[in-house]
Image 1: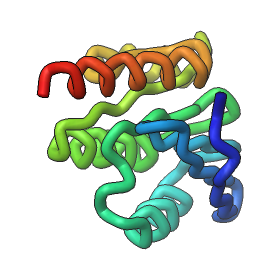
Image 2: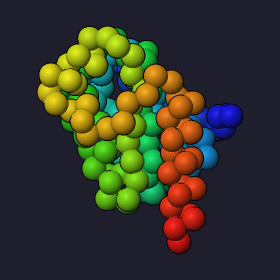
Image 3: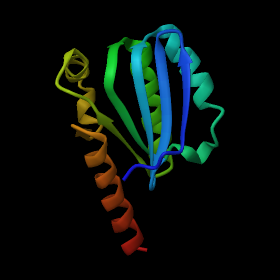
Image 4: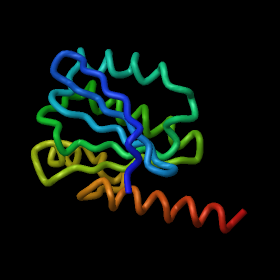
Length: 134
């Protein structure tokens, strides 16, 4: 079950929705993720507490376009999560965006999921394993 606490913000042709589900932070992007919106998104995400993005699920199912600036934001979130011993997971359908990520060799960096629920379940299992090992 997903928590309903959410924050939404629109930057030109991109809408960002951030919500929590257990130990995961879900970042849903809708629209076009280009150089302008990537810059605005980075600025907005910097307003959150630094520990917010440990286990990040990027929901890209409603994203119609993404250029290299958008990919750079995803890479930066991934590095931020890894620095806190977290993870970044992508929810992405079989479409042109996934083809682009495959061509760039980036899909090897992140677990891929068909839906948010399976990504949240994977984070929950990871958190349970980490708790059991401490």
